[in-house]
Length: 49
View 1 (tube, helix red, strand yellow):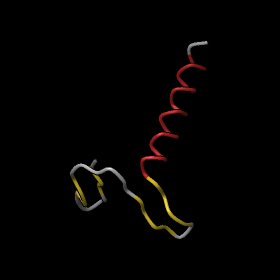
View 2 (view 1 turned 120 degrees about the horizontal axis):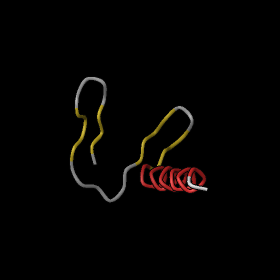
View 3 (view 1 turned 90 degrees about the vertical axis):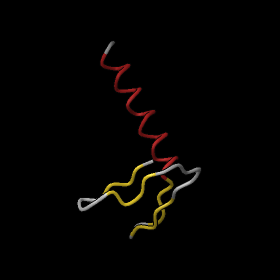
């Protein structure tokens, strides 16, 4: 996992769980990544139909 800010690499290493606190609540990175991958697969499938 790499967390990159505009200024530098903030974190680089392995992790089992990563969560960010934002103005709108918490973001579970693994869950967000899973949702993004699922959406990209759907887009790819729709593109090939």
